[in-house]
Image (tube, rainbow, N blue to C red; front, side, top):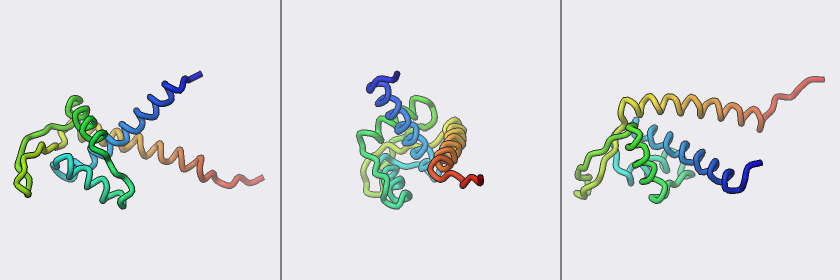
Length: 120
C-alpha cells in the first residue's frame, strides 16, 4: 500500500514531467529566457497556467542537465542580461516522446471521464 510520502512524490513527478513538456514545447517556438517562457506558457494556456519561478528554474536546470536544452547569456530587448534557453536535438526527440505519452494519457482519461454509452 503506498504511503502518503510515495503518493506525494508520484504527484510531483507527474507535475514536473508535464512542466518539462510545456517548457520544451515553448522552446520549440524559439529561444527564450525564463520570464519569456513563463509568459508564453501563461498566454498560450489562455491565462490558466501560471508557472512560478520556484518551479520554472529548477525545471530548466534539470532539462539542461539532461541535455535537452542549452543556454547562453544574452541581452534582452530591455537591455538586461538574461540566460536564454534553446532546444537541442535531444530535446526535440524528448518532446516528441512526451507529446506521444501525453496524447495517450489524455485519451485514456477522456475515455474514463466520458465513457461511451453501452447498449444492452
